[in-house]
Amino acid sequence: MSMNSVGRSTKSDQVAPSGSGDCSLLPAEPLLFEIGSTEHSGVDLPDIEVDDKRLGNFRRQTPLELPGLSEPENMRHYVRLSRLNYSIDAGLYPLGSCTMKHNPRLNEKMARLPGFADVHPLQPVSTVQGALGVISELAHWLMTLTNTSAVAMSPKAGAHGEMCGMMAIKAAHAASGQGHRNIVLVPESAHGTNPATAAFLGYKVVPIPAKSDGTVDVSAVEEALSADVAAIMLTNPNTCGLFEPDVKKIADAVHKAGGYFYCDGANFNAIMGVIRPGDLGIDAMHINLHKTFSTPHGGGGPGAGPVVLSDALAPFAPVPFVQKSNEGFVVEEHGDGNSSFGRLCAFHGQMGMFTRALTYMLSHGGDGLTQAAKDAVLNANYLKARLQEEFSMPYGDQPCMHETLSDDSFLEGTGVTTLDFAKAMIDEGYHPMTMYFPLVVHGAMLIEPTESESLYALDAFAQTMLDLAKSAKAGDVERFVNAPTKAPLRRLDETGAARNPVLKWSK
Image (cartoon, rainbow, N blue to C red):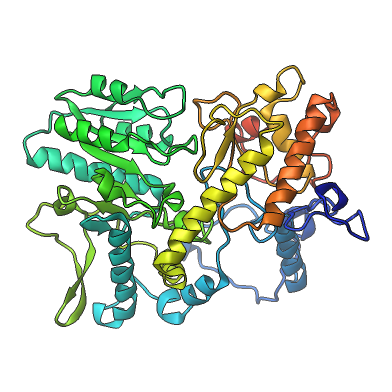
């Protein structure tokens, strides 16, 4: 796609839009096994005679057949692969519900400081006071932003955090003689990991339908409440990109029935600094540090999903946790009064994510975090307004939060599916948006620009999406059903690849 087609003049129409991750000019990269030879090694090593008595029956009987490459060959292979990878550094990442925001390089610089990057969980506490100080400071600000009483820092990601919060709820019910409560209410607009977490912990999951406007039906919640309900797991803002206006009424109803309110806080980036979830009545909520406080998913390792807890659940927080004493920071391994539900994982969490998140917080300040949330919502609503002329939006008559949602009805009769549309986006230099999720919308296309994107980047993306929509409606089916045609690899059978993966290379 040329620069001219996104409304900006240029001397060459061969240049991809600014912010594009276009890799259409790059060839596919062969496997290391296809580049290197098994007959030699990249380095010279002396032959070694190994005594059979040392390895016993474990001595290898067949050649290993690893490819031998020189250092330049090896380096070039991985550099070429990196150029084929779409990243937030290459272009706008429109994945809804995934918050692929830019990770400031200052965060990386801090996370790579030797005292953080080289820290080991088994070091003496006296040697890691700085790292523990970071964890304590970050915990303080997470509780401040959410108006909660405690926070468990050890969960490694969102789903892990969900399990942590629900285990605290289960422990609280058991401690109060309410262990018989075996039902968890889960709205249809919740993240898919919510019902999975509840089922994993042995709960019966009861779905709560959404109203026609995409939000949770309070009356349906009230009808489902009983003496057997342990909790509700509600995502807010929900997966339709909407804030739940009746969240306080829902919390009050659940509490009145003796249950707890678990809030999925994966979308906290849309409300941080604007609303404190504790004021809404939540009892537990995980926060994806790798989403809200920079660093795209993974971040070079595990994510981080701290869980904030209300007064009622604070005593049941897992160990270990950091405490401040007269001698400095200490790691509490046993909990207060044996009420903790125990240890969630071996160690305390992901130090790299903690450091990045605190750096992000301190760089922005309280007003900056609030502005980031507002900008994320502004960007999403701007895209919604731009795309509405060609796309069908089931909840288009109301403002969205940090992401905008379309269904596939605008493609009806064109012969183009949601998947076809997404594949065509690859030819235009963009990673596809989230498809077929949330499940409450048929052929869903969920787009989240985050606050990181400029007006120019948003306009370039919007123009591309509008051009594709118009092309589909004009009958240019070939542009979609054969896409991607410019990528190094053509369309794959994702279902077949997932069900029958080829894990071993053979000649």
